[in-house]
Image 1 (tube, rainbow, N blue to C red):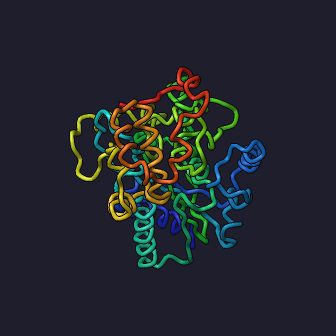
Image 2 (cartoon, rainbow, N blue to C red):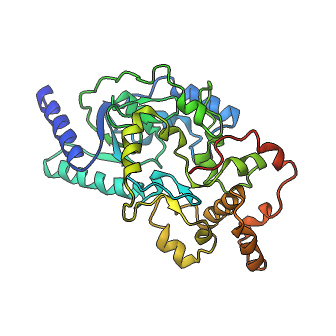
Image 3 (cartoon, helix red, strand yellow):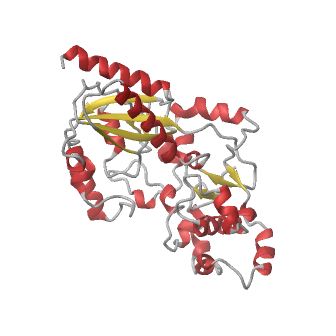
Length: 350
């Protein structure tokens, strides 16, 4: 094909992606991301990566390791839904955990996009991944020119912000690449100051210490982690909520008293009392469902204790002989837990 024909394919892909609801789309080559391998190796060596991340460095930085025929990469960002602000005393769910699981939503959108490509006689094959694939989406999204990485480690999209799920479309043809966008964080340190784990602004990002991961971890939480959890039930949006590039979105949500099916607040006692059937109906279709009922119940239990909610003692008395096993390590406060309370930031979100 001629250069003009490949440019036309790029134009059509961008138009189709926006038509399907994507907030941003950009194009880059299939070359490995320069310098990313050494950064990932340092994180592995220091033990600060999460268990969710592949330990095979090459497949995280090189599309051709994932798919040998890959010649080009399309990076896409799909908006997380607008949500209703939680009520006081409720547990907090991250925006990515609201509504249908964003992995499934984006998978469906990419399937529609691939059908449009096939219907228009795309001259080759394609593959894609949504968050759970090995490639580091944020790194390719930056190189594809759809945003920059802020000090909060999130991809910030100009004019939109960072509340979005990312995906990569791998092509066996290379389309013209887009230019990098300028970093507009400037001297802002709001996310660094607000981070409840105080892990931002350092040379190496300790993802394993981020509360977004801790709320999903099935390991026994340390005394400091239990308190720092605050009333978070799944995920943590704190560093994004204070970001100036997300303030338009945050203000809009504050004006929304109710968005059907998009409530970020969760009834803590309701979560503790979830049956298997209720869990499937309430959470299994969301991104918060994949870690199971027990993790959510543990977080709800700790949230009630952090909030010193008097209902917790009554619940414990009623359920003394039928407590979820995951709560066993937390039934008595660990020695020294009280000593951490003054040093843990951002405990309760209201």
